[in-house]
Image 1 (cartoon, helix red, strand yellow):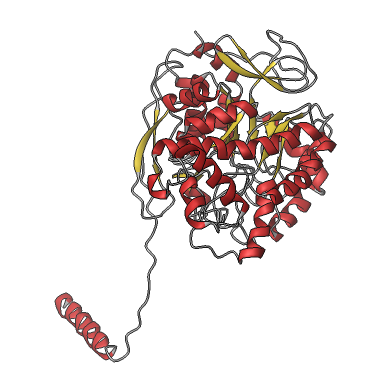
Image 2 (cartoon, helix red, strand yellow; image 1 turned 120 degrees about the vertical axis):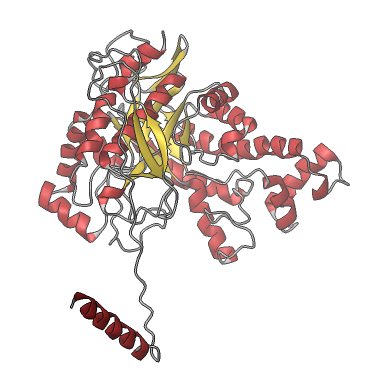
Length: 495
């Protein structure tokens, strides 16, 4: 009976399939995203300082990317590290220990073999910050803010306290600086201005925004247009606004622009693509003629020429923007232009040499590598003679329910894994002795329903809170675990 029943079912299926041949319906069944189940290293019977670390699985942003295993060091199991409690902090967040000279503003200083930010009271300080700390723009984010906080001002007040409770002391780029500035107890904040990005709009109008060669930032021929006299007007108009912050002791410093394309072939692109009447072409051709002779062509360009030109090129931008910053605010630090490309400026000693001439602290957006590389960080400081801060980094969790296909951060399975990654990343930064801060990108997730969102910020779990302002508790608990022991870690690594 059972056999006959199964044969009948099979026969029906065959007849059904045959009847459908004339009109085939192609149903696309989405493949499920399979998150591997990973058993972390067994720490249940371990003790602090034993060097038993977690294993975290991660993949790139593409859902089809292979999962790979990585080690994640955490403060509670850092080999031979016995932690207790960081020293008390002063008014601005610096540790109340060995006091340096107080200028009334944040500054940088090398003490022994380690770089520090020195706070306005003269205490050593490391900027533990969250970027884009501001009210979300989407309809759901706006409604959630009103429901939870009432007003934007109360949101800044309440969530500043929340950030402090998890060991953060500041905010990074794209934060609501004006509300933070006047809040009851301001975090140590930063300000970003965009002279070159503003000038790019001029080129979009002039050339229609369609160029034979353009990088991911959309600059014409992948060039920073710093040789143009017209750029100077944008430097003045965008940077002059900082004068309102010049007396504020809670401001750490300024960024100009973000991830500009300092490409290795900039010399080639100027000479190959620009019209001979353009100001940038004239300036670059003069430089090239003086270096190689008037008969030299693009075919004669060497790697040494490209490296030398990168210094001339980058210094033109730096000279203009830093002059404006010093003009409108002589009190605060210049934190740089936020480098991000490993094969370009992050591997260019000449770019860093020039950066060291003008920047107080060098800013770097760190993507594409699981953790900071000690040799690379040593190069940055040796080339520039200045400290650095990481101004963007993050991981995204599969358990958030978001697609996580935008942005440069790694994808991990859970919020706890995100926290473990944070601890591992910070531990490597502190080993370098030249890192004076890090900025997690960012405060709030990307809302998948946000209209007209930036393509790099769509539907991704980058935040420490959801679009409804709910904390990812396993993430922030792990962040606090290391944030509250940063000074102790500096002493441990300085032994």
